[in-house]
Each structure stands twice: as structure tokens, then as C-alpha cells.
Amino acid sequence: MKLDLHVHTCYSYDCLLSLPDLIKAASQRGLDGVAVLDHDEIDGAKRLRELAPFEVLVGEEIGTSDGGIAGLFLKERIPPHLTAEETVERIHHQGGLVLVPHPLSRGVPGRIERRKLQEILSQVDIIEGYNARAQLAADDEEARRLAARFGIATSAGSDAHWACEVGRAWTEVEPARSPAAFLANLRQGRLHYAAKTPYLVAALTIAVIAPRTLWRSLRKPAQSLN
Image 1: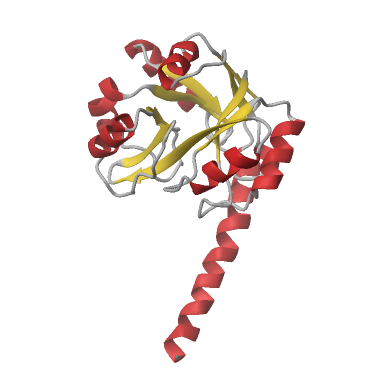
Image 2: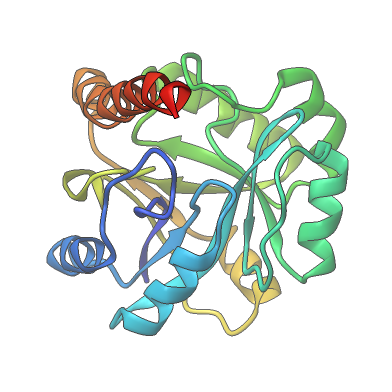
């Protein structure tokens, strides 16, 4: 299966990618499925699973007090601002898999602290070995070396926030009927990815964040007059 194991939807605060547009982009790029890792939210993933003609893994990129940790195969939303240890425990309690996204990627806000990553490595199921939005290939290479050193499975994902980003990185893995089987197959999987496009990512990020920041700043004076 050709799976993009890290995409976002408009249910993420920093993403405008609608579910129909995500379905169209994934289908055009020949993906067999995606893992939706919206920020602190799983409703988008659940809704996409109802609509999409392909596999949808329900996940969440959770903003812990120690940085970002993702869960795959989730049934319930996990709230943000818990510790890394509490978050990992809640993911596993649901029967999910712990995935650390862009763990060593410089310039990515909210990534997990390096010290904390070392502390929880024994409980991590998957390390994102390639993130198409990460600016430096060397950071992805270091993440893959870390995973290999500790025998942890790796994944590749686009971290798409726009339709044009979907499928820029994907993981080739055999189908599985359970999280445990998926993890076993992932260890034999292959990572596929395109060249880095840091300027494109920066431009797309500004295109989303700037209007929303402006809107919030304009609302504050208006609210103060009420």
C-alpha cells in the first residue's frame, strides 16, 4: 500500500485543506490511504474515513507540555498539554501506536524536546524518518539513524497542509488488519520522498497564518468597544 502517513485537514488550526480537496489530491497521486494527524483533534479524520474511497488512519498530533507526539489508530481524542508520558500512556491505552513526528527537525515549532525524546524512546513505536516539510534533509537522516539504533520503525509523510503537498512523501507497506500487524509490516516498509521545498513551505505557511493573525488582531479592538 502507498500511504501518506502524515496529513492535515481544515480541522487543524493552521490548515485550510478541505476534506473533498484532500480526497481529490490523494486519489490523483495514487495513494492507497492517508493518516490524518490534525492538531489536537480527530473529528476531521473520522469524517474523512466516512467519505474517502481509500484507507484512512485516524490519528492526532498532540501538543504535549514537552512538544508534539502523534497517535495512530485512535478511537478518542487525547487532550493537549499533558506530559509526554501521560500522552503516550493514553495512546497505548486505546490500543494505538505512538509516532513521533519531525523529531529532530530544526525550525519546526512545537517539536518534542530532544531530552524528552530520549526519555520516552522505549515507549515509542514509530519515528517519522522523513517529513516533506522539514527544511533540512540532514535532520531527517539523523532521525532515521536514531530509529535504526534503537530498533524503532520509521515512517514517511508529507505533513501536508495544502493539496499540492499531499503525497510528497509516502510509505510503502503491506496491508494490515490491526495496529500490531501494521507496526510489524511497517518495519519491512519503504520510505519514498521528493526533494525538499523549504521556500514553498514557508510561503504556504505565511499564506495561512498571516490572514488568521490579522483577523484576530482586528477583532480585539472591536471586542473592546462592546
